[in-house]
Image (cartoon, rainbow, N blue to C red; front, side, top):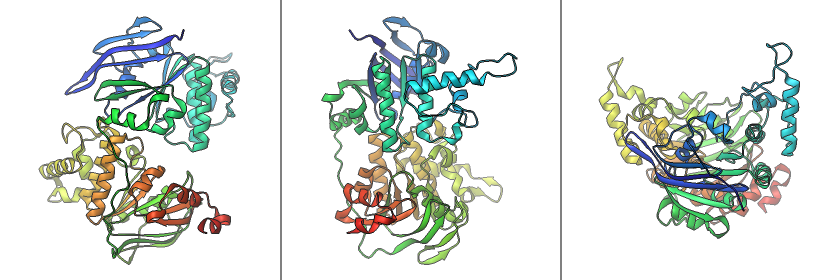
Length: 507
């Protein structure tokens, strides 16, 4: 008989003005991967924070191996063998692999002021070897790939003798090969009787790795399904409470649309090599390619975030000099980074401030004083226009869901009235329902005459949204697809076409 590791029954949690959990339930057995899915704001994170001791529940019961427990704090949760690996990895880049695995639990040497690194390295090597991970325990973490850093987080979890491991969007920044390696490790843990709670918006992954799927919506547990019996359409319907029909978006691009922006022979570092493209008014131009193709690097070079070593930029046919993001913004170019939390938002400030910050001169009364009434009115207009789900424009941005944070970033640039918008992975970490809202916004912006550059690693997103697609490989443009040719096979042909076989891909 399979042992039940965790049973959460009737869990409720309320914050001021928000019922985050409403009698939610979740069960985890030994030796299973149990996926937890739902839109942003569905309650997944809150439920897991209750389980890991970050929050205390208002009501309900938690059973650990059949015994009722009151989880008081994170340390208590760890003592019960429960560890969470967050999407944003919590590692010290300047420390070694072994030091990161055992941080706070270091072995002391003969002298109390010195650490016994030899023992730490040996213990770390044993854990890594157990998982068939080829990682040097003495290597500096900051020098490793994201995938290997993810593996170190797993090794750290095992060093606590954890039986329950929670993985939050573990594949968000991994390549297909790295995902396969991660799944190999997850299966090892499952076969050893560990219980894995797997949180992901990538529904196609769940068929490969999970045994059961629990769907949450609006703080409630909707249904738990066997993965084998659950179709993607069924999961989506349960998540959003309605049918979603995913089809190619209708283009609003006129045949004689003028070119709004052009890049000629852009060069930047090792990752951008003689890249040229143009985007028309009202067009959504996609940038596709595998990880390391140079798409983000191209966007940063255009925006002035990274220094170009060559090439020209033109806006409305006229050459422009862009050496910094400020230069780009003055020329009507906005960049919505894939890392919105670090580069797009001031998380500790409210919605009103974030929507106004790029256009602060427009909200001055005189030269020194801010017209707060005007800034507040602008924020309210953007919240309404973009359907930002927030109780008030005074709400701190860090308290919003990922999808709503993305809308606030967009609101900032719309306030600035930029005509050229670069969206870099705009739906990363965003649930299905919020994705569709972002897609509608993109199409609405294009209909308004904005020129949209969409960088995405999700081919369905590129195929659905784009009028034309530029494909890159190893820092170069290897192909361009338009109309009916925008399909997965054609894009992948160009995405894997290095310089030597580019001509064959074009045949």
